[in-house]
Image 1 (cartoon, rainbow, N blue to C red):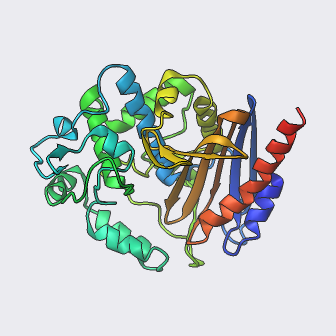
Image 2: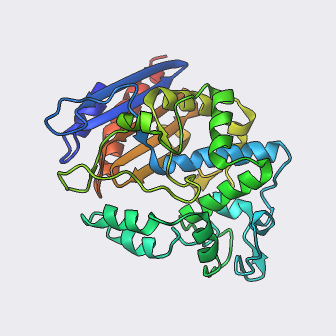
Image 3: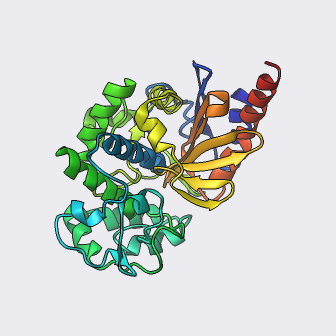
Amino acid sequence: MRQTATTLLQSPLLHATSIAVVYRGKEFMLHQGEMETGKANPPDDTTLYEIGSVSKTFAGLLLANAVLDGKAALDDPIQQYLPAAYPNLQSQGQPIRLRHLITHTSNMPGMLPLQVNTVLKDFTAHATPAKLNAAYANYGQRQFWQDLHTVSIKGPLGKDYAYSSAGTELVAHALETIYGLPYEALLTQWLAREAGMQDTRLSITAKDAGRLAPGYHSDNPAVTTPMPQLPWGAAGNLKSTMPDMAKYLRLQLSTHPAVVESHKPLARFQDDFSIGYFWNIGSNRQLGTHYVHHGGVPRAQSYAYVVPTYQLGVFIITNQSGDATAGAMESALAHIFDTVEAMEGAR
């Protein structure tokens, strides 16, 4: 882990990282670097990080639980959970179904409002965080429902991969409809009950604001703002600590029925790439079948890996977000995977 952190922090612009590893029932945590340049303030176990789109796997887990509860079916048309008629949410006579949303095969736009997709095309531009803040400043569920009427679905459903955070937000609303609770309450109660996770949430209270990790966007040397709040937040607004993420990894490596359901491959795109309930399912010689998700907001990027073959879970995060950040994390993680492979070979 130390070698992974050291390798990662040699990358330009990266200067802090935290890593949680669960390996054959044991937990390991490492924090390295300084969160703000020159301030000697390393992250620690109380630091709240923005985990970005890793949040989607939590929504998938709750939907898997709803399916097992008999409260939802993957082939349910999303329309049955919506507050008004949306005849546009279909293609070639077929309605968008829950399974299309969780496998990114609904052909829904990436984000709503639609102008955010244009902003994100130039993600590394220094103005991007401010443009995102402006787009979401007064954007709540009411505006989302209005914009959803303007969405046009092109192409066959269930076939082509088209990553959609807007689709994830619809899943959160469906869960609210199913259980009669706000998504955040539903999620925090479930995580506390099933995994003992008490420090993972969508919104930050004033009391906890000081625990939120500062972070950097692109090559801008000034600390930037957090990810703005999305209408439900399921697509990328979760904040968590490393001890809680270790509990999440432990849960993902367990035989919990909702976890097992959420890992089922539902759409196959290549021989070595499928999607379950938002989880990307990969397969290679070193790790076997494994589950992975990247998270990115304007000032943090992360990866979660679940590798059942080795009873291994890894979560890594850094408080900088640019074009090269994800690749740097992937390269650095090779040390952990190579070490575990060698240890397993010696067993």
